[in-house]
Length: 182
Image (cartoon, rainbow, N blue to C red; front, side, top):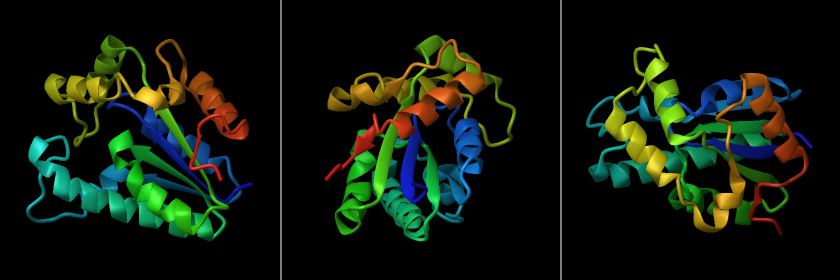
């Protein structure tokens, strides 16, 4: 089945963007939605999404992302979203899931160990890459205890890119991390 929504999340430096692009290219009809691109659409009045005062803005942006993901999926695309999408943002996807119950939604959290995540995040060289220790560790901490979604976590600390990609593909194929199952 190609029409589905795959949420690939975790803290900065977990490898989300690299794996999401690779995964999307593996489908005959694949889309990669990089959530940072949606925040960059705000050209005036933007609040850094990790700032505690950014909740209203973040909720709006996440609603747009969920809408885009489901629109692509309804067009028979495997839609892979990468970004910081904690459980607190899943209601945006649940709303669409109730309207489209036949579309599978997978929620996969990449969570390398804390020190490895920090090292990977700070090694990034893209001009807009978040490399500040405080926000990186704060976001890692937000993913450290996901309650009932802790079984959606893949620890990719010791993995090379290909190993992580295989783990993610297997989880999707086996429906291990599916949300909103009917």
